[in-house]
Length: 414
Image (cartoon, rainbow, N blue to C red; front, side, top):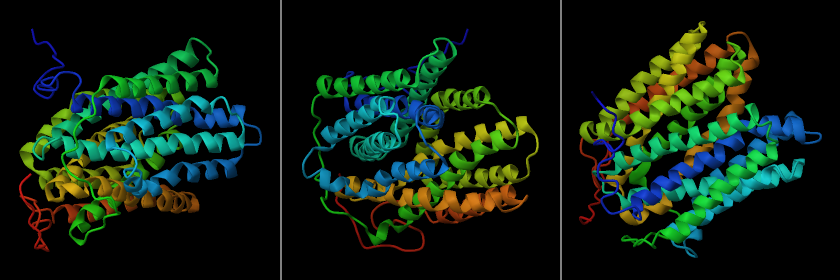
């Protein structure tokens, strides 16, 4: 009989240094983000309509802009590191995120929602930036894709915990919004307390540049991050909307679809990390973008509900291959640039988060072919990403960042 073993090769060695290790701390960070964010995101529209007086479409648009402000400001993380160590700042950001979620239901007014959203989003974006930075520093170049894959799997597990919390609370217990938000926030604050009290302060081997770093030789990484942000907005903003607007999926069906995605990700994400180690970054990204071209074209023309759902699941699975972008940067980067560049890349990624949704929304509602046009634009972006990914060298390293331009930078071995 074949038995599933969670400590399969993809998880082998996670506890080799005990449970109070840097990698376990990264996994807790990865789980904490969806435990806080998924309940907030899943319920925010219902909460705003049901509980907040005079909340209209205008206020919803403002709320989304407020939520994205910290993403734009992620580059300022380098100034925070003048005050706090990266590990300490990550825990503070986790605490801020938990506090913002916990208070959401306690301040049911327009300005109260703006305040708690800004609080939650600041913690979310700064923690995400630090999580990425610390993963690149604590994992070796060779092991990073696997570590990031494990983090993606644990994040998927955290999302399932959040969905279970929401489902049980509303389906069986008739729980008020404020209680769900308070429980999600309290769980997050508890995890922050665990990170603070149970883990030692790990050594930071590489001095980090305490200025905003934008280097010419990282241009391909910046371009890949920007295109990744644009693709994410089409998936988050319009692929899910397609399920509801065009095929009539009710909330239970949408949540079930999300759950299927996360269950598969728990199993698949570490294997994708190991696959990137074996293939290299360029083949992995080429495979991803060729697949995305087909998926976006299919989105444009699909007219069968179950086929649209299959496309949505496959589309989500391709997200894990984006690990290769981070792995590529780790191989070409000066170790001292990692924290600063993590913030800069987050800001670049979020340029698309603000500029694309409203423009594509105008295209969607312009006429009957609007939906087709939005997803065909996604296919064009995938073609552009494919062209960029081909420029990644077979063996990326400082001085060999792209196939079209070589810098004269050679860093000493770490």
